[in-house]
Amino acid sequence: MTAPAVLLPIDAQPRQRTTHRPLLHHVPVVETEADVDAIIVPAARSATSLTHATRLAAELGCPLLVLCSLGANPRDVRAQTAGSGVEVLAVESPATSRVPVLETRLLLADSPLRRRTDTPGKRNFGLALAWMAGWERVLFLDDDIDIQDASEVRRAAALLDDYEVVGLENVGFPDNSVVCHAHRDTGGEQGTFIGSGAMLFRRSRATSFFTSIYNEDWFFLLDPRGLTTCAVHGTFSQARFDPYAVRNRAATEEFGDCLAEGLFSLLDDGRTLEEAATSQFWRAFRADREQFISGVLRRLDSAPGISVFRRMQMAEALHAARTSLQQFTPDDCVGYLKTWQVDKQAWRAWIEGLPVGLSIDEALAHLRS
Image (cartoon, rainbow, N blue to C red; front, side):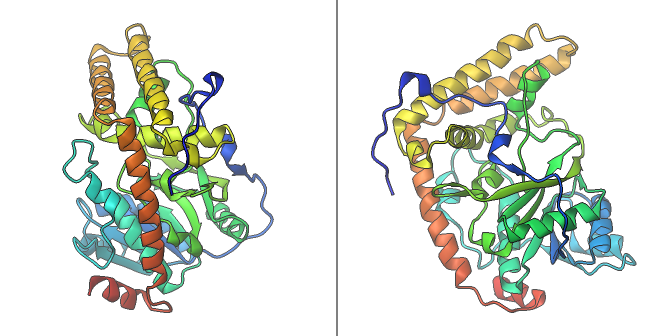
């Protein structure tokens, strides 16, 4: 649905934010616990990276579903986890299945803005399996995440009686976009948000989906009126990675990063997502985003403690992000979000039409047939 044009007053122009954490309900103390029905890992690394997930599944007493691609394959996963006492379901992420190919994915198929990762598709496949198998409390866990305290996960799972999603807090290496890493590395304040790397969801949330752009987990949390009910409890550690090592990473992140930051800036101000339905809003936000990236570039010249090589990497990434920003228009932003809203309705209708009460093997067979 297209909202009427909204004129933004001068003092309410959108701004890139250092954090969106006030949007979340922080629940430091939880008195009850609940069982976790399954852990789903969209694995891309070698089977040895599943040590933390396997240990956690053993402590929680739940199945571990590993959706494999790239450097992960089911045979190695089964060999690695043999003798763990965990029910491990390791499957190759299928190139084709009954999971629908949504219009937002096709929209960028031939675009330089396309993000070439299969992780959103694997997570959507996992959502469908959870729905059919009747798993009510599910943990998405990335293969570079370590959760030390299983009891924190059980307490977080208990919060799903009141919230649709509960994320754990990252106390390890920050997981941000390349632009936001550069902002922090040049002296800027930069927070993190909850993400699907360590996120519990209620089965009913499977009617949302992961879109095929960066910050897909932020879009998973959004409903037409705003953010779904989200809480934070427990902690995890993200393994360190080099945000500047992959040359085109910043370029392929920029479209999703700009869209998500723009939408969440509205929520930060207590405004509605309908206001993102105008080209005027995106014209203002894109201009602000460009100023933000340019400001990081200016600080980079004098930021202390950065080697010459690292400075070159960061500058290349920031210039690539700014170039990507210039490759899409305010109307492109509006058009993508309209298509995303249509996809949300299509996904919900599809998943609610799936058979339920199946074993995981039956569910897998149904999606593959």
